[in-house]
Image (cartoon, rainbow, N blue to C red):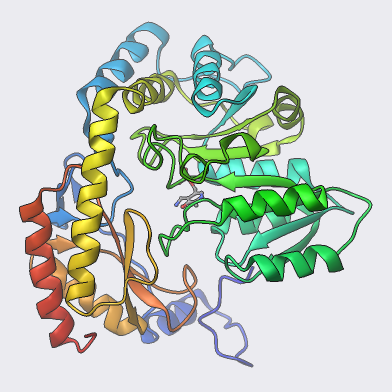
Length: 403
Ligand code: PMP
């Protein structure tokens, strides 16, 4: 994967870092981090300005929940600050085992394995399951960590057009192999907010004898009556072979997991290099994750999910009524299509001046010409918060001729 998509066709890679940084700036693609003061909530102080936060994955507000904080603090008191080693050496603490048992129960699988992040999970799981002689069929809009996992695997990577089941069928027919075939998809597409068509993918994987892996980074804790994610919404929880999910988004903690059969989990623990060769997650993070799953499973979790749903519908309908294109969003991730990089970043900057933080997304994260504000809702936003943001977005959208 080339991270230099900002270079034009035929343009050679420059000799100096400074020159390339200048090109990035000239093309409106230079990225700069904004500093957030204080803790993560639905309002934050961004570069010194109090703002409504509309671009966090802390969908349920659990990153600021006292029960997670208490769990983390008592874990530090009891177990210290670090695991001290990788899992297969001496870093397998009892909290790792407890969390994995809890995740397996949550997802209804035989076992689970915790990874240090979603990026580490995808870049470890895929090369563990597929190698030379195998094939990975990957949705064109899958997250970068899946793409990197495919590239690391040395399996043949076949990218299919986004959510195009007929095209995937043709590719499965065309690309036969004596080795394994793995279909991998985001459950919720992270930049578009639409859902993978899991029921049809399950049918295909059965017909073609493939494995199905779903990255539910953005569905976990949020979607489905009990927060089991995009596979629960589509009634296929038991038919997915490898459920990957993250703990740092709706769950308000950090890390990720693969939930699968005991056999696959054992296989991953023996083959996934990002699992084997890295110091394991520290006790505070594990304890916060355990507390988060308990919360997701409680009436409070259900109430937070319902509030998030209401906020999502209110906001998405408000954007549509103002004439914005929300790009087929079906979830709490609601993109607002702008198009060009400079116009997108001007939109973000104008909104921030007015106290709304909605990050603009540009290449290489999304294809050129499809820059957008990626708005994300939280259960802890109030209707007043969202109505105020919608009014500002409509006004600035007209000012910048986005609508
Ligand atoms: N998969 C998807 C779909 C994601 O959106 C992300 C994070 N943005 C990841 C994986 C990586 O997860 P993490 O942030 O825990 O590394």
